[in-house]
Amino acid sequence: MKKALFIDRDGTILAEPADEQIDSLEKMEFVPGAISALKLLAGLDYELVLATNQDGLGTETFPEEQFLPPHEKMIATLRGEGVVFDDQLIDRTFERDGAPTRKPRTGMFTRYMDSSYDLAACFVIGDRITDIELARNLGARGILLAPDTAEGLRRVREAGLTEACALVAAGWEEITEYLRRGERRVEIRRETRETQIVVRLDLDGRGDFNGQISTGLRFLDHMLQQIAHHGGVALAVEAHGDLDIDEHHTVEDVAITLGEAIDRALGAKAGIARYGFALPMDDCRALVLLDFGGRIDFEWEARFRRERIGDVPTELFRHFFHALCSAARCNLQIAARGENEHHKAEAIFKAFARALRMAVARQGFGYDIPSSKGVL
Image (cartoon, rainbow, N blue to C red; front, side, top):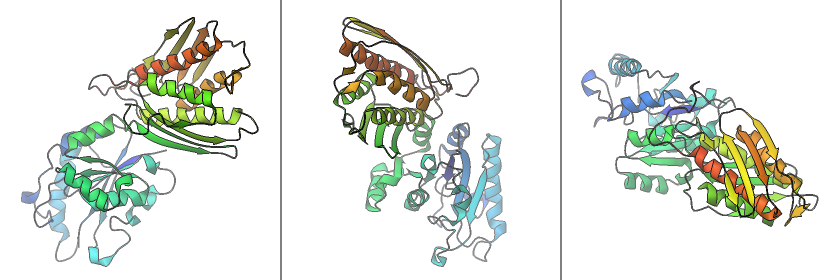
């Protein structure tokens, strides 16, 4: 599905004058950092959409011939830096008109609401609380540009928009860093006739939700805790499944949901290490080879002599990682040997966690795609 950045103009790209109307070239000035930031964002997997309210554009109070010179100069300047807007949405009404097309209403955005866009992965970027309100109305996430971030956070809280606001940023550099690294924090829900699963994941280990894991299977909870701890990620899992029938659906759907969360949190995968591996545990040795290259392949070389470890059938360990591999769109090879079956299972999960930690790690301040193809 497609993604878009809906970007406000006045106060966000162009500095807004005291009279809130940019009607001459003399009044046109870029917000510091906007040009270089947009140039960087143009290389990401988003469509760029300009979305602006221009009060009374085309009327006597704001003639078209006053609006066009600075606007076209802005467009030409950005184009010279490789920034081209895929769409320009301009509402010409006054606030008192209550038009459905005026932000934060969504009348201008109907073409983006036809299910071809993953709105939950889209962002609205602007300097006003109405931009965050627009994000909520679209089902997207908002980024508020506020030089005084404490004041910006207060405005967001007082408007009841905390859940819709992904970031309050003091400047464009912070916005660019946030979007270019990928949010790396996601919440994925999966509901079937057999299970209801919620996975929350932060690849950088931030979040007060870490360790809140409950699947109804205590040994699976223990193994998922290993992924969180040794993977250096923040992880919460809540699962309700038909355990009265069998463990299969719960284990499988937790794996699928976790795999989808990893894939979503990695975003464009810019700047990650991509590969990871290994570890020994007491009498056991587990080897995990992991590649987030976007292609799916799975190999498993581990045998268990016991039918169950705790409350989890050992045959489901292979199935767990196979389902996770497919959902995360990765290459995953797992091999383990040893005498103690508990240690063997735990070594596999810990080795996977360590491989995950290595593979998702960001490499310094680089944002290169780790592939000679330029895309993963």
